[in-house]
Amino acid sequence: MNAPSRRIAHLDMDAFYASVELLRYPELRGLPVVIAGRRQPVIQPDGSRSYERLRDYVGRGVITTATYEARALGVHSGMGVMKAARLAPEAILLPMDFDAYRRYSRLFKAAVAGIAPEIEDRGIDEIYIDLSNLPGDTLTLSQLIKQAVREATGLACSIGVAPNKLLAKICSDLEKPDGLTLLDVADIPDRIWPLSVRKINGIGPKAAERLAALGIVSIGELAQTAAATLQAHFGPNTTAWLHRVANGVDERPVITRSEPRSISRETTFERDLHPRHDRGALSEIFTALCTRLAQDLQRKGYVARTIGLKLRFADFSTVTRDLTLPVPTADPAAIRRVAGECLKRVQLDRKLRLLGVRATALCSDKEPQAAVVSLQGELLLP
Image 1 (cartoon, one colour):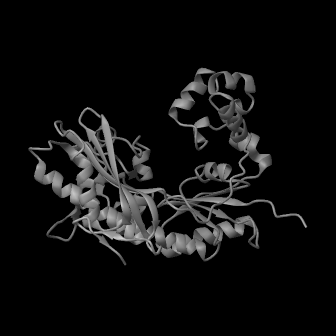
Image 2: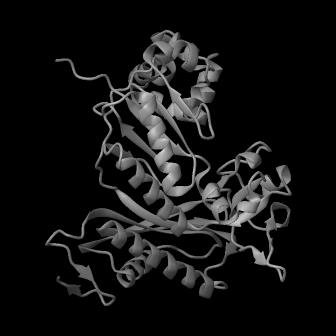
């Protein structure tokens, strides 16, 4: 008996952070809204809310996400807030609420798992789903999943279904928002080849520039370019990969269980902070980051053997330091102490724009050898 052909879905929540906020502030639906601020809406005496506008923002933040109305004005994720303010000065600015985003992330993933349990978690707002062994036609299954997500969260998602992960991810972006795209191998020339090479996950801006210099802009042009031409500029391994993905070939499985390599927390300051003059503010931020990192570890059931520090200075130079412990920990005071030891190994004579802490060498907190390092550095065995 032949194995069933693969049916891989990629589900991407539509403008996830912004959509979660619109559940809280439904009066903003249909308006350009960006998530990046710090100021909460102000309740007026008549019960209405007043919101911060992009034109009023002062600082150096980065856009986390934006509604589709804001995107139509040129605003996009990763853009500096000040640049976005020039494009959409009247757009409404809302602060981030990661606790809410994580809660809705858990809700939509649980809803999908009730229909299709073979899920690969790719982040807070996207997953791959293996539909290959499920009964029912692909369209019906996909519609059931979209309906389940909406009933569980009140949010819309876009789904692409194809023979592999590469094509599924491309497809989920083709009909946003609230899209559903089904694709077969026979559809690749008409539906995939006309697209920009940037639509392929793994081809970034620099690779796209190098391809454009060779006259290769679309996926179809990449598929039809001789291997010798590509190899002269990219090498044999990358050339082989480029030809595979341009022709829609991807054998990667849906990985339903994977262990994270690291967990981190970092923040970019509204203004550059000086290690001496702003010591109090930096200390408070540093402690908060370590506490949140410990909470992330505890929530996910991990302890970390290595704690790292990341500093970015005003001139954009970046330094990292780390320290490996004899036994792993998820204790906030211990993480703060170890990160502080890392900090002592950095010359702090310049203003800072970013501070971060990271936990690596993770293992389950259920392992019997796991121990906790106290604030004093003593080993507290379980």
